[in-house]
Structure formats: structure tokens, C-alpha cells
Amino acid sequence: MRRLMEISAVMLTAVAGMLVMGHYPVLGRHAYAADVTKIHKQHHVRLKHPGLKTTEGVDCLLLETRDQTDLSQEYSLIVESVFCADHLCKIVKVRIFLDELGRYTRFNLEPGTELEKAEGKPFSATDYDQLHCVLGDRNTTMWDLKYEEIAGYQDVVAQPDTDLDGMSGATKLLDESKYVVGAAWTCYTLWHWVNGGIGPVIRGKTAEASNRRELRAYLRDGSEAHKQFALEQLIERDAYDAESLDAINQLISVDDLTLQKLLIKYAEHATADRYFSMIELFFSSENQKMRLRSLRSLLDSEHSPSANVYANLAKQISRSVSYQEVALFVDLASSREKMSSPVISELVKLLESENLLIARRVYWALCECALSGTENAKLEAFRKRHSDIL
Image 1: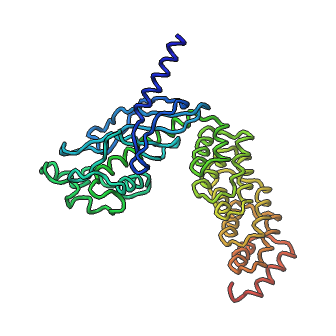
Image 2 (image 1 turned 90 degrees about the vertical axis):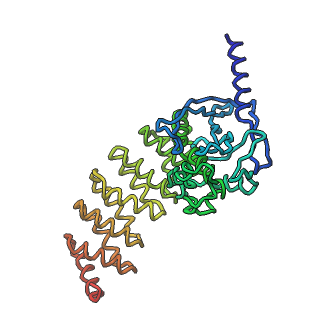
Image 3 (image 1 turned 180 degrees about the vertical axis):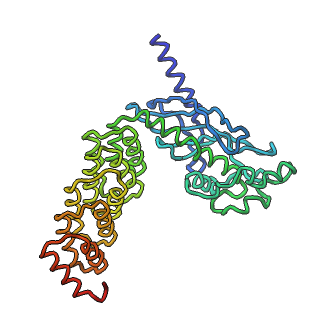
């Protein structure tokens, strides 16, 4: 039995090698041969595509390549280059490659084949470069078009001999820098294979194969996309162990807006005590956007912070030079009736702020509070100095 398994493994590697053989013309027409040191695993998946006549999707074979440490390296999938309405198009098998997060990386063609444009013209090296750029652009808006609109599909049905990309159909609506001229259908077809349902499938498989240790490694050393993936997974798994919390606390100064939102979401899914502890830490960040997100989260939270939380935040607010921060904190403390003596004591310091907008906002808030004699005196002095702006 063991010998049979060894033979099967060798055969699978050989089959995988035949499946992934091909070339990417732009990069020197090199062949991508299966590395015998890699492990190849097959997944049967069902994918949908707007160019398919059926809404049920089609069965596809997804090849996963792993290294000897059993970590995912790459996924690939063989698809047809174009869905052809007039049955005259040249259909080429294209292998598309994606990373472990389901993001497009490159494509290969079967040896001896080339992609074609209108009138049977082969792709040039520039066309292949352009196609590569098109497939990697996840934010393009040109793909809002329906498949039938690409190159006047309805007219093609009525006039089978019409040159697809030579027509004045939907391609007129497209920016020529966003697709290969003469190959709109090919670009459309391959883009949807690359950026459609395959991405979430791959991310799901990577999630299933990743443990907390690997996710923490993504947080420490991964790209922003890997950090986002790791945070999403830790939120999904309610992972609030000490090691995960420590890895997340290292991200409090990130600039990436998506990461900031995920950090706040992670905190909001924690218990109340842990949530407040994390928000206080996030607010200590030097990143103003992160500080503002922290305050907005507190403003919207169903949890009621303790007086100590407000007092700690007020100490930082008293040194703030941001009107938005001060205004948000004042709204928060006022709405929660948390204008305690320690909070008031810190806010009074802002009456001396060089930013008169900040000082005036605090003045009006303090007018509604019960102040000590010294604090009242400072408030009155501010009123006399700045009566012209009150």
C-alpha cells in the first residue's frame, strides 16, 4: 500500500507538471515546469462567470502548490481565453496564477499557442504586457458592462460575420488604456475569471489551513493585504489570547485605513473591559486618524466606560492640538454625563490653547459644568479676554 501511495504521488506530480506547463510571452517565453520539491494539491471548485449562459456556474480544477513546510505558495486554474458568440473566435487555454490571498500574479499559455485579436491578428509583446496590467487592476470600472454589451453582442447574434472588436458597440465606452484594443472579449473574459469568485475560494482555503501562529506571523511580517487577512481571521475566530493581542498592539500606528477599521472592529468584538483597554491604547497612537476612529467607536459603543477611562483619555486630550479630537471627546463626555472633576481639570487646561476654536469649544462645554472656584475664575478670565469671539 505504501509503495502504491508513493507511485500515486509521483504520478500526481507528473500530471501537475503537464497541467502547469506553458509560457508567459512577455517574460521571455519561459516554461513553467512543476518543481519536484513542491507539493501539488487539487481542489474541485464551482465558479460563476458573467459570460456563462448558466447561472449555476461550472466545475473547475484548482491546483494548489505548496512547499515542503506545507505552506501555500500559489494557486492556478486553466480557463478558456474567451466566450465566443459567433463560434469563429480562436479559443486558447490560459493558466492563471493567484497567490494565497486570491490575488492575480501572472498567466501562462499552452506551448505553441498565442492569443488573437480581431481579424486573427496575434497578440504582440505590448498586448501581452497590457493584458497583464488589465488582469491585475482590481479597481477598474470598465467591467461594470454586461457581457452582452462588450463589442455589441446583440448585433453579433444578428450578424454573425461582423468583426467583433471592430464594431461601434460597448468598446466605445471603454478607455483604450484599460483593455487590449481588438481583444475586448478576451480581456473581459479573463478579468472576470481572475477577479471573480476564485479569490474568495482561495482565501477560504488559506483560512482553513492557517492557525493562529501563522496569522500572527502575517501580522508581524506580512504585507498590508496579509495583515488585513490575518485580522479578519482573528476577528472571525474570536482570538483574544495574549499572543494575538500582543501582535495586534504592535499595529496601533498603521496608516492603512482598512487596517485601522479592522483594528477597531477587533476591539469592538472583545469583552467590555478588553475593549476599553484596547481603545485607550489605540488612542495613544501618534496617528490622528486612529485616534479619531477610537473616539468615534466610543461614541457609538453600547458599553459605558468607567470614569477612569474618561480621565485617562482627558489627560491625552488636554495636550491635543486637533479640534476634531477635542470636539469629539467633549461630545462623548457630555453625552455620557462623564464630566467628572478629573475630566474638567484636564479640559480647563485647553482654555490656554493657541487654537481659539479648541479653546472656545471647551469654554462652552465647561459653562454647563459644576466648576471649582479656581476653575470658574479661569473660565471668567477667558470670557473677558475673548468676548469678541464668544
